[in-house]
Amino acid sequence: MIVVINAFSARRGGGQTYLLNLLQHLDNCGGMLIYIFAPDSLKLPNHPAITKVAVSWPTDNPLLRTLWEKFVLPGFLKKMNADVLFCPGGLINTNVSTSCHTVTMSQNMIPFTPSIRQQYPLGWQRLRNWLLERVMLNSMKRADLVIFISEYARGVIQSYMGSALKKAVTIPHGISDHFRVNPEIVTSRPDWLPDGEYLLYVSILETYKHHLEVVRGFHRLKSLRSTREKLVLAGKNDMPSGITVRDEIIRLGLEDEIILAGNVAYQELPALYSHAKINIFASGCENCPNILLEALGAGRPLLVSNTPPMPEFGGDAVNYFDPTDPNDFAKQMASFIDLPDELNRLGRMAAKHAGKYDWAETARNTWQSIRELAITQKQNMK
Image 1 (tube, rainbow, N blue to C red):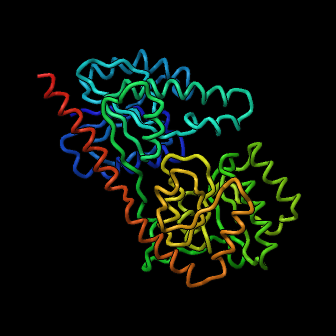
Image 2 (cartoon, one colour):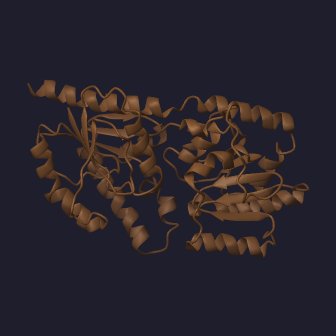
Image 3 (cartoon, rainbow, N blue to C red):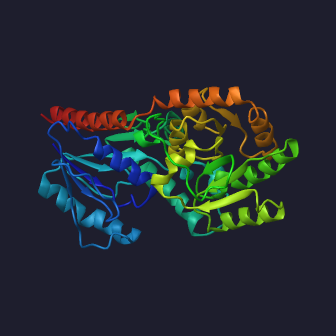
């Protein structure tokens, strides 16, 4: 069975993490041969079933990449007699033969969340999300299999559909082992962290991630108690929304209390999570939130947005708050931050709950679903 993966859209972050974990857990590939088109930045595992295919086409440009998908990729699929074309980025721009089956995913919920789309100013980004809603829906309608990574996303997308999907499965992401609590491995505290205890929020400083409300809530928390802890905001912050957060920190006189850490190396994140007194996740729009899962694995208490799908993944192992309400952030944080027994209980529950999410299981279910699709389709064609 020959599977071709078009992963040119996986240029950073979660997209690359997902693909690497799928490919690293390809121990029993069941006779599959995988050819993958991917950016140079994606370093693939060394596996005899995996071949990275080089192209001379300038695929960095979205428009040129679309032309490549329409006019060049079909020839490769025909030459290789491919059984499956897998497009994890959510877009299928390639016409395939009747013997080649298509698989795509739902990973980006912003195009399907009007309230978030409207937070972007009029311009290219808002237009892009409007276009993505339409082309992603069209891709999912055409696909022989759509992989959802949360039940929440599956429900939202299917409410948008004018007709039923051909086939759909829900397979959430996993947690890498190095993000899990391991008493035998002592992760050293990053040198750049402030002395003493800290609260941590890891995420890019986009408006819908509600950093502004967290900063204001932290300021109100300080009025409720003698707050010793610093607040660490780790993530890309050089965009307009990040500048707004920085200005608010200055306005509130919190320059010495809040650390804008910027991007933190991925390999440093496990230690950052595991040394936090409380991890925070305040996003208002997610599909399957990797940051929440990784923070669960650290076995530290969490205060998390109550916006779906976060409760789907946090369950009863975390505390929740309204991410649009700084007062609720302060109230919920104050309700347990000074209770050592409760913090320990929440930390244990987080670590236990994290056991539900495993990349090996994600990969096994994904490859099995793709294999079953191709086998079933071949049987139907006989």
